[in-house]
Image 1 (tube, rainbow, N blue to C red):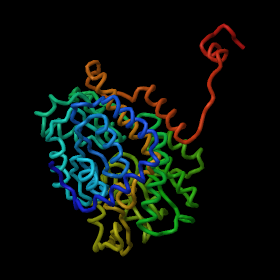
Image 2 (image 1 turned 90 degrees about the vertical axis):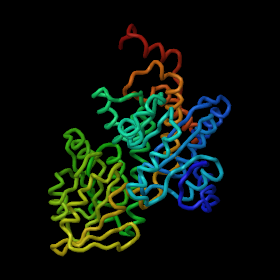
Image 3 (image 1 turned 135 degrees about the vertical axis):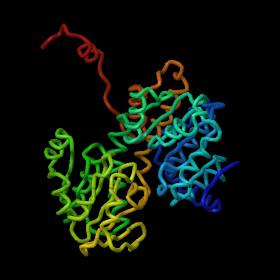
Image 4 (image 1 turned 180 degrees about the horizontal axis):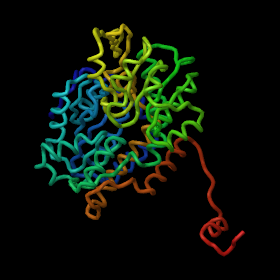
Length: 418
């Protein structure tokens, strides 16, 4: 079997971590049990470009249980857990191409290796596999029946492709599922981002000023958790409605030009590029700490920071200190890549349980319906979303009410009036 991991001897350690994560993923566990029985992916090849973590490992094992021939590569050079990659190869026979800290050339070589088995299903976290298939490996497009995408950034790219009529197969936007963005983006990103910042810096958040760029679901979660830790939170936004919501939620809202002068910690979660630019770095306080929790590190204008600096050094693991020509220091976390994965372990398993349940069921939906689907981006069908929520409640030991016949009639009619 072809694969490329850091050290296959790490497999036993990775196996234990995968089992630990699986214990908090009851929804995926139920889906895996059904997949094993029904074999919805029998004879199908799937390429997944995702963060290679313990939770992803359980998704790969679920797809494999359903009959899929799976290949996995990393969607971010710093997010791979090397022991998990080794375990999937050694214990599950899954071809993995991922090494934590791999350079840009290796990153794209791994994607090429992962698509060499001519995938029929793609699973993306940032649309890199789809992009490669549509640019450098168009010869493989004829095999693909559809795919899934998990990130806001990836969905933006795919919708742009669909609008321009260049997308060659249907894609399910897992990111749009309520059981994904309401929980994964808000609670998962919120907790894991602050976890990464604290692990990386060991600085006290309480009493500090945290600037959150972007008030989408991820930004909401980070702001909520930073506030819970005792921070004074400032939100920067370009959307007036979201800016107003942030104010109503109790946060100060201002342009980055103003926030840059008073922030202690800066986190970007916008999906856009150059959110924090050279002029912002130049006006920051001495000792400001900057990081990104959006999918790509382009949210921070790192070349501008380098140009402003006269010296740089790795002062802690994953923390690079830049000394500006003015003498002020700015610390960059995790090379500007996803701080929750570069300096921590990503989202908790119980949250990823729902996101990856959407991935698994979205892929099954593609297999069953691809002949009827157009070449565009589709939301996760509401019936799947609600079923995942139902299974999650069961897994948490919770139950909800049911409508009575009288209530159902009332909600479905107009005759009863007031």
